[in-house]
Amino acid sequence: MRIGNIMKKNKQDFFDKVYSVVAKIPYGKVTTYGAIAEVCGIKSAARTVGWAINGATADLPCHRVVNRFGALTGKVHFGDPNLMEELLRAEGVEFLEDGCVDMKKYFWKAKSVNNLH
DNA sequence: GGTCTGACTAAAT
DNA sequence: GATTTAGCCAGAC
Image 1 (tube, rainbow, N blue to C red):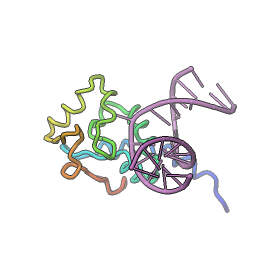
Image 2 (cartoon, helix red, strand yellow):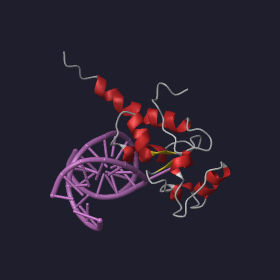
Image 3 (cartoon, chains in turn cyan, blue, green):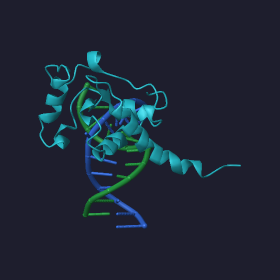
Image 4 (cartoon, rainbow, N blue to C red):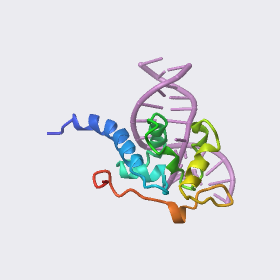
């Protein structure tokens, strides 16, 4: 039996997982699109993660999601280009000279969606 | 309803 | 080593 119904659900699950992971990013920490995608089961879907967050509710700390360099690529979507950085600074996140988050100190990697509290 | 685009990333050329 | 291609998903045109 080759099943054909299972696939359908995974897609929606991806978005759902993205929201779950982002919502659980610890205070003062940041993670990357790729990391989220990987936890959601599709490592290469980093792009889709960004898309998902784009349509996410304001409840999600999307300012804690940066690209793999720690650059605030999504800041333009916060209304004010400076808002994202200010939010992170307010949480104690430090920035490098390049304007990127200090990933060595503040990068947080989700283990798995199910294991998340 | 086919094509393009996007808050990305890695591999291939 | 810089540029291009490929992969992912959903929405806009």
